Image (cartoon, rainbow, N blue to C red; front, side):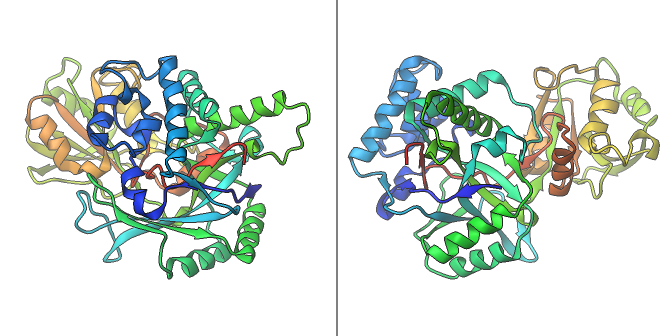
Length: 427
């Protein structure tokens, strides 16, 4: 893998909590408008620039993209974003604190994961060395391409995973033991975020060398941003008659985490109807492919692969898939998201395309089983299905095989905060 340090554009320490924001794609325009409020330093003015126009303005309006560029310039002119003088790598830590809204505890301690912020090589994406596990939509790619073009920068990073590496782990631990440049707890979710600048030449050289040894990296989250960055790099290469391959536009910003540190949470389903079946008929059809056990009214979470939890009529059920319903040698067919989609959502409920069906909704694992129960008990939904989470190893195996995961299969948390550092395509 080819990577490089870059001269990050980032907020001075005293402004970081006013600038930083959630990613553009986890909230709508009204939510961004409300979160930005009267804070003119909020990054939402750049990544959700429609908030600077009358309510109802399309985020795809050409004037909205132009506003993003105007705001980016304004932030730099006002000193809310300042470019580092030297090319650096950066270290970014996320902690799901015990008193956050959705705490996650690992070995008795709040979960922390450390990511190295790098310049990833566009050509590595285009040639498949940066591996993907999801399909992308051209309209979403084009939206992100327009945003990168108009700003001539990657305003937000993508989220990568890489195989564990002892040299990089030692460098990470070295910096994590020092005072961070930024240290704050984000509003709303209550997650902790820390950020360090890696400017030592020896450490920079070591990071570059270790990534150079890797045969691949894996997109965890941010497939559309990765695709857009790769395509923009190709565009700029084609437009530059004096292209050498060393230009900054050949790289895009990514935060790379060791695979073993990442926890993928369950991504569950809530169902509007049973396709005309009574509860008894639905259970009978499930029994063809699953061993079913009534667990009662107390919340029941799947305990292992190929076990599902069904919430129906105030009760939880364990559903264990029969051995002949999946193939352990098929990296897709062995996934619980595929098993449930084939045997329940399609064969029994006949939901069609899960990405467009109005009869199903998806609930990220951080909301927990309580959210599934709430939506069913309220009458909004008829039943809920909880899945055992996909592992990072499964994702890497699928990406290595060149296959694509079914939709709504993974839920990564915490999301990367935006605005901690920005990568300019002209250096």
